[in-house]
Image (cartoon, rainbow, N blue to C red; front, side, top):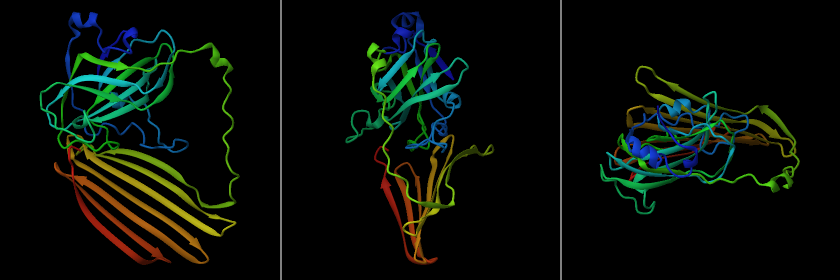
Length: 336
């Protein structure tokens, strides 16, 4: 993990201040992350709660990234809005991904994810008209991070972490790219909201409004799971995201329901074309002695030029298959 310090007053402007630049900190730093980077960043679109959707300690992810730290803050810092990172960089491949994380590092070293942003660098000017990178050419790019409201306590630090992979949230680029970052021409812009005296008189939120729950008899309790495993021989990493919605009966209607979905993602650390995704889902209903269910399987892989997509859907009535369809499709990558 490569850390470069910031002065506190430059949190919102430069990675490297003019004084440090004159002292030899005008550097070109490189990063090529393992393709397994991103497994510890939580689930895209997760709901939190009792399911393991949220991001754990980021220190393992930080070790796969190029990191820039502030000194400990001398006062609380309130972030409100969408942070952005402006970078001057070059790549050695025509298509490359960039993932930017903003983390809060506590005095005991725990690195907590605040927010993140992703950019396919071939989309640096437009999503409508992507264009290949010229290897070795320098570009000015801006990466917007997701909106966030966060108070970072004094004595904690901020960390900006740059990586070239974010699996399985982002599909990898066709080739394993290395990025070169100019420290002198890169900066973090932080939207902040200083505390105000009027904050103490703000009306608190009202309790959420919700209809009364329906009468429901649980047959199987639901649960969520997230596992990350690595084959130490091949290095292949497998991420499994599961959600069992449980099974039960809506008593007033006499209708039973049952649903489970499992997502499995695999990749090798040094081969972006080894990426595989598989989603299996089942949803069923029962009423008046008739049981129906639908089962689907969706698989995706890629080459340098195309995505391979395979989908299957089967419908059952009282365990007899009454409908089945499968289709295979290839989709041009088109700078993806």
